[in-house]
Structures are given as C-alpha cells and as structure tokens.
Amino acid sequence: MKTFIKIFVFAFAFAACQKDAVVPEKLVGKWNHTYQIQTKTTDGSWSQWQYISTLAAIAPIEFTANGRFLRDGKDGAECCSAGNKFTVVNEKIIFSDLKSCPYASCMPCSEWGIPRLDTDTLVVESCGTRAKYSSAK
Image (tube, rainbow, N blue to C red; front, side):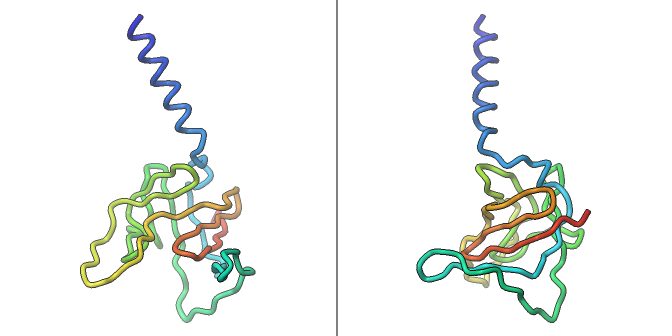
C-alpha cells in the first residue's frame, strides 16, 4: 500500500510540474533567425519589430530531443549567452554547460523566455531583447 501511495504521489507531482512547461516537441528542431528583433522601451513595453542589418549571416540554432543546443550544427555555448545544454521549465529555456569567459563582464543571460512558440515561429526573450526565428523544416 505504501508503494502505491508513493507511486501516486510521484506521478501527481510529475504531472503538476509538467503543466507549466512548454511542449518540448515544438521546440526541437532547427530555427533560422528572421533578422527581426524587438527591444524594451523606457516605459517597459516592447518596440515594433525591426529588421537588423548585419554583414555576417546569423547561424541557425537547433534544440535537440536529448537536450543539446547547437549553433550551425556545433555546440552552441557563447560568452554571456547560451550553453551547450538546455531544459525547458515554465516557458523558459534554461541553459547549462556554459562557456567559461573569465575576461568578459557579462549580464546573466543564460535563460531565454519563450513568449511565442508554434510550429513555424519561435520568439525568444533575453536581456531586454526579443528575437524571432522561423522553423527550418
């Protein structure tokens, strides 16, 4: 009977934790940057989407089913940004296996909020900026 109660409590706790998580299956795959960003305004609202100009292409990002984060098919860790591994909790991507950057003074941007995620569009929010990605089916 005690085993049954433990199993029931564990299953209930597991199900309760999963309610706030973004469905990982939607996130898994390659995403291309759309070169569109939003920034926070002084009043705390978001600006209109703006196209950015860059002399270099922004590499596609990829979230794998086994929790790896890749940029252009390679480990995705960058100073002050993402790590090589991720988990998703409460509509946030939480990175781990971060790159050591001893000579850089970084803002803590190792979590990305997910204001939008559907089959074709991913919007991530980090350090006062939102970036839009499209699925690279």
